[in-house]
Length: 376
Image (cartoon, rainbow, N blue to C red; front, side, top):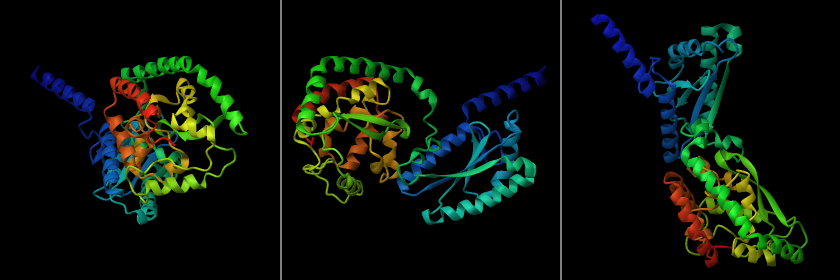
């Protein structure tokens, strides 16, 4: 009888440990899914602080393991650590995949590390699973932060704390409800502006009423942002590209006169200057809010050539929340805030987000707009 209770107690302890994700169930230095997720998040933050790249290898099972992912991962748990350094971290990923965090790989050694580790792992797969099965397995490498402004710049492998269920939390649903009610109310109250602004734009210069531009949104997903046109058509954006690059790199002195926007931009029309001064050019983004691409409150959605110059930690401002029409940056001086401080304001907002904070920022926005501080 005591033996039966001992077996039941051992089984219960094992179940609790697996649920908590605190035990290495595979052994041999191979982490379970939840434990490896925590390691990924921790190493990403470490790489951000050190300003160094983070290299992760992913091994994905091919056909033949659909019904037996445990067999695939169990074999890798025994063999994969032998292909890595003692300081590297390996473990299970969602589905039929495993990963390895390659610690402290210098930026100029990334390609060499990929080639060396890739050859070892490929040889191990052939030895353990046979040529045919190994040929259906895929070994890839993922680098954080990826350079450039493409979709790889927002590889959610490195953000395991962000997942699909986030959009279904009570807080997220409340934020969406606030966006729908707020945007519909604003469209109704501001409808006279939507009638007068197009007339002024067409009378002031030739070209369309609306300006459509691709921007980065939630988790790096691209969308078409709407604005009232405030510039002459077919103007070169080279001047703004260079300005943004210098600002992000800190080559423009910070201070009260440092602005995110160019103060005397020759591309802006006379009507456009008025629209920009009172942020009226941003009003069509209420339709982006209705479509679910933006929120009333959130980080400012960046242009692709801005993201191309981001450092790793700066990309975090787009993770976990939709971009907004207004936000902490806009009510804190708007363009009179230097770039790094703008990013820190966004990150602070993301950490401390609540519906009450959104309401507070919305209530502060009209006064910030009327002061016209930092708007050009």
